[in-house]
Image (cartoon, rainbow, N blue to C red; front, side):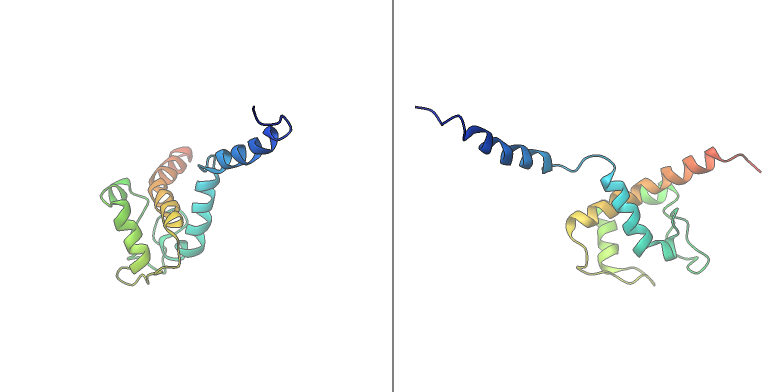
Length: 122
């Protein structure tokens, strides 16, 4: 004998809910990454990845070659431990948050290049 018909929809709801939450999709990751970067990093690295006047020796994330030579683990390690004058954030961020940070840092060269390509030359 099978399951009563009235119970089947109740079992389906948790399965659909879990399936829908398994993988983040859409722009949530980049928006969260941008918010985190602007809150914790932009003061020195600039909102576009170009170091600010207050921190001219900060690493530039606007040049793809600078980012491509770094592994994800290196970027996460610098966020955790700091480098040079940059303080480390220790265990403040979860692994998932560090992955979002890393993905956003990796996206900065494309953002800067596409913005400058869209602007007319002086």
